[in-house]
Length: 106
Image 1 (cartoon, rainbow, N blue to C red):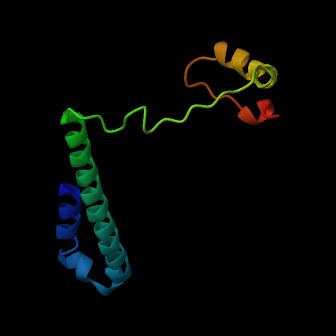
Image 2 (cartoon, rainbow, N blue to C red):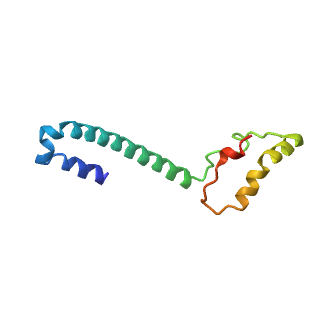
Image 3 (cartoon, helix red, strand yellow):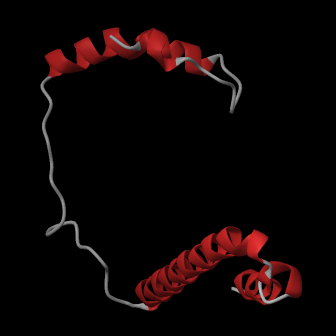
């Protein structure tokens, strides 16, 4: 939020009042409005997360918020055939090394 305030102060400088900068400064003011809204959103989300983490009650319970699916074994074999080449490639690839996933798509 300090950065947004500093930018706003800079826009009050004599050079920014010049007509040449009129369009730029108006767009920067729009950006500052968006920054403030985003800052407020982050603050609100952060406060909600703090409340959830400090609360003794669970945010969700497995019995109420859980869906279980059963996949028959024939699908597992098909999945293995489809994804085995990708799995083998990932085993031999260094972390964060680029892998072209389209070549593994069925």
